[in-house]
Length: 387
Ligand SMILES: [Zn+2]
Ligand SMILES: [Zn+2]
Image (cartoon, rainbow, N blue to C red; front, side, top):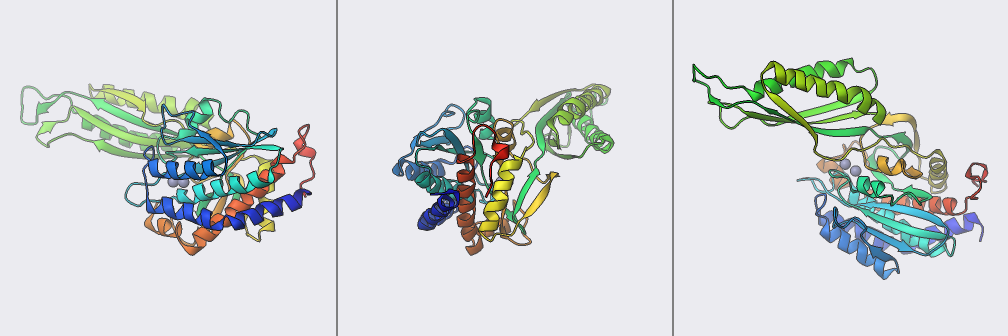
């Protein structure tokens, strides 16, 4: 079989697996589980993969019991399909990760059927994309170092798209500590931690306006005291600070933000502690070659798509960390129109006819790209024939 015939064979296998792919999407949608608690989803996917002949274990069980790593075959090319399956509080699958699990597992099963001896097929079950970022730990432990490619498709609104990037992100928590006192105490006024924090909140907005590179700042006050007649001795702010480059974020923004917090606290006679409350997500480096393969795959599947600029970012993802360990690509696939992610309408789209149909299309695209990677010539992939 030539390359095209193998891609077509993989797509026929996806068609045969359509009920299973839709079944995964529906089951996970109907059993939404928060990041780190995806026991039903992980067990469901592990069972499917085990039944299909994959060897399944969990190399990061100490940190994420609901992660897994499934392996099939023993060919030279190492191709990873990344499955996500965590939901959001209250709105369930408002990010459509049920479809990501369906696409990645469906693509892996179909690709395994045509990969023969040439590839080793990996499925990584990646919990907690929305929060604690299991892929950060997988990347740190070198699980992607030997991969030739890591693939994932994310559901999206309005258009299918390839390329772009994601924000490098630091989730920070600032705890201001003062001294409690009764507000009517005329001899002893305490130190108002909330005053210090509110000052810092305003100063942070002003500082943010001075950063010259593209960035984002989100902040909320999560603890502002216990009763209005007590001077608060503790006030807490959570913030997410994002930039297109981790280097700018870490070398320019973070030191200034830390200094500002300490100066503001000192001015009030308070103290402040800055900690990371979730791991750091690096920016996505979409691999140009994989993006070309996806463009070709979507074209062959009659799926219209947009190519995003290299510096176009909407969100943050721990796939960014994967992309800095191996070649990775995370296109988006359209599952609805005029629907915002992380909203109930998006959760509805993630179980809609279009959403389920697109899960099948996405699985085909990933399987076709995997064939491209498998047949790349090892010496110099840049000079391969892509047709
Ligand atoms: Zn999300
Ligand atoms: Zn998502």
